[in-house]
Length: 375
Ligand SMILES: Nc1ncnc2c1ncn2[C@@H]1O[C@H](COP(=O)(O)O)[C@@H](OP(=O)(O)O)[C@H]1O
Ligand SMILES: CCC(=O)SCCNC(=O)CCNC(=O)[C@H](O)C(C)(C)COP(=O)(O)O
Ligand SMILES: [Mg+2]
Image: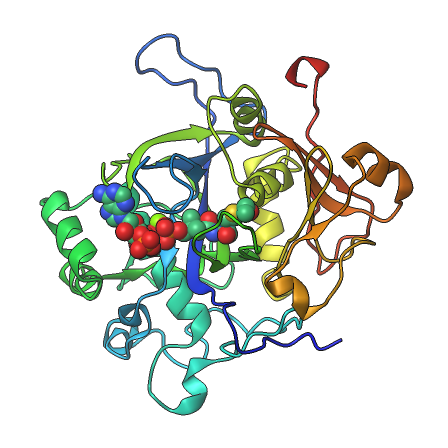
């Protein structure tokens, strides 16, 4: 079966998301009741999308958005010099490229066409850092005078500059202003603090109005920076550990799309902030696979099939189609053995089932512990 992208309506907007994991050891002193530090020793930043958003209104997501031409502009070269520049920008050897279904026409290094644009792994990092600034006012920058060492420690967000709101408005209006802000602060985006984590394509569904090809990066921060939601695209935020986030989702305080839920459950494997940071450094060169979930509609629910699952078909028909069955989800589960799937029982109850071996030194999610009271 042909697995390459056919001409047709399959169009994914290229995007980047950043999972910010901040070390969290002290209880919060702010308004009571204060929460004790989480068991995991770190919390993740989740932003609440505006109810007016055209795509996933109201969902909690990691900061992120669509790649802009300004993110790959050759104008960045002057700012990264003299310490960093092509081909690697100090990111180490390029990770292995992992061919996975479906192959998309735009993958590969945009420098190959000699346009002078930044390599993709740099441009996507700049996009993620810019979006974190636009949406959350978090500035993941590094002074140009202090280049990172070979195994950089956890990052630290820069204090917001005077005139944060005006700068942010300018960047939101025209992303080219982000380079001007960095030059003004004599900093570069801290691309070295962003670790390749995962990549997701929005599946075909009858309701999704847009589709994204999103690179997820993970960034460990020594402490949580202050967050200033833009109150336009993003109307709120929370810092919560993987277990706290799971609980918020199950108790219907927040809604997560399946990829975000999967990543939260993956992060539930780490017992401490330093474990997570070491893990990120250890798999820096492994690269990633980009996953296209295929939605299987059942008589009473839905299953998002992921690569490796016995029902997953690398068939280009499923770029634009669902699978469906008249059987109930429970029956489908009883029949199978080789699982890599997210079972959607209802809007606030997902179960992840993975029985396949993890690849490329990554971890697979911990299954969410579902109590009967949530059913
Ligand atoms: N005040 C607002 N309320 C709702 N959505 C907004 C908004 N301001 C911007 N947006 C939307 O947020 C998206 C920008 O996302 P990002 O910069 O993270 O990629 C755009 O959506 P579209 O992507 O649908 O055009 C834009 O229309
Ligand atoms: C059909 C049910 C689904 O699974 S929808 C899945 C939505 N998620 C994705 O497509 C992949 C993850 N991508 C993101 O989370 C993006 O950062 C984004 C979609 C939130 C970016 O959107 P923006 O409007 O900010 O450009
Ligand atoms: Mg966004």
